[in-house]
Amino acid sequence: MPPPPPAGIAAELRLPVYLLTGPTGTGKSDWGIRLAQGAPVEIVSVDSALVYRGLDIGAAKPARELRERLPHHLIDICDPAESYSAGRFVTDAMAAIGAIHARGRVPLLVGGTMLYLRALLKGLAPLPQASAQLRREIDERAVRCGWPALHGELARLDPQAAARINPNDSQRIQRALEVCRTTGRRLSELQRETTSPLAGMPLKAWALVPRSRPVLHQRLADRFHVMMAAGFLDEVRSLHRRGDLTARHSSMRAVGYRQLWAHLEGECSLAEAVERGIAATRQLAKRQMTWMRAETASRWLDPEADELSWNRDVHHELSQLGL
Image (cartoon, rainbow, N blue to C red):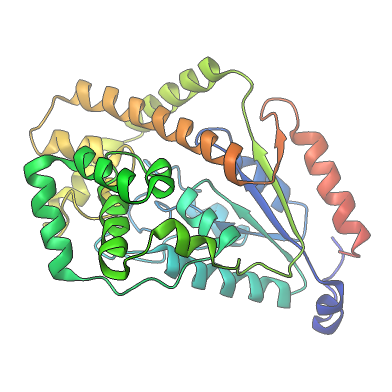
């Protein structure tokens, strides 16, 4: 690998930003790691579970030894009791991108958290501060009516925002209703008025999209069972025993963690929790696919067949930049 160019030359090159996304379970992390083993790239995680310390097995977190050998960013940066927002992600990601460029290397954003990707690609609207009182009122109504009913209310107030939000995604429904009530404007309108923080940077994006949905579904089920055999339940049990976490924390709403937490709370059997976890993982993959079709201008790749050509093409492009 050639040495990185001096900072001044790196700036003149207008080094690109690479993005590798796709639905969960398609091998994004493995592709990124194999590229980073021989190319001047550093991986920036775009995953809402990987930011939390202690969420390892269920989040399919790369091994610590691997992360020490190959630079990774935005992994293990906060405690599960903390709240980590899309706004904080954008700040952290842009800082990482700037530092990587300053080293004469290329950031490779890897992950599929749609909220984070949208914030990077579209920008974040200047939204009002959270109102504790208003959130309590919305929570109380959700207890009486259920989150799907509040999602229906959001669909009347802001159809575009509601179309992007799952009827059971309490956090995002709450925030969208809060914005409508506080500003008198739709969240979707405010978001359309924003600018991407990546504006002006050369951006190249790829998405790993499986050709067969049944094959992906089977892979997701197999992966969940492998995680269980590796100690996923013990990992969630350790978090449960801390005493300062609840099902309402963002970290514990992650797919898989939420279902196993419900089992530990006595709400369902372990077998049922596993089935719920697999179903939720498949639903997540479906939402990610829908979002990618609508909102990302990425080149689609077959995760079963295109890695060698992708890796070769990226190496060629980097060599053209003198990296």
